[in-house]
Image (cartoon, rainbow, N blue to C red; front, side, top):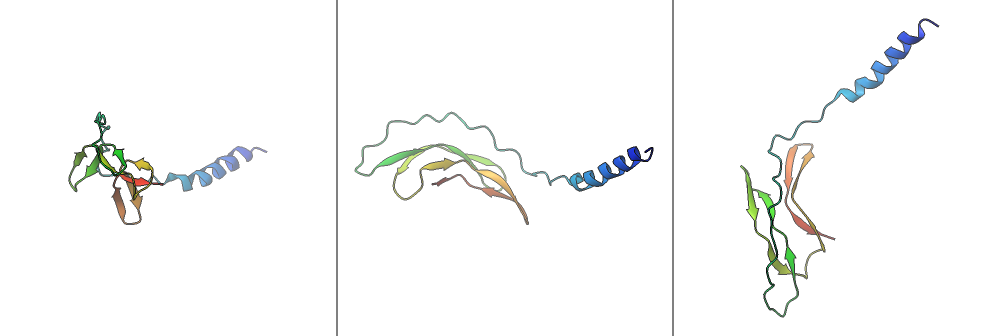
Length: 101
């Protein structure tokens, strides 16, 4: 019975050993907060338009702000996804902002 605490401690250390790997930190600066980007009046066209919000893009050395604009409603999904960094087997990759369904 007096060996139980040592056995429990050894088991806990063994279980926690697999949790010790810390994921590689993103070497790039965090994406800045979105800027205020209020839609203007849409242009008058025969084609249906929708507002594409302003967003940050990565240009290889820093972030650049892409202003919001009206884009044709046809030809893309209906959900706007801002850009983000994703970790892959080969390192960190910038996923640009895009429309999805």
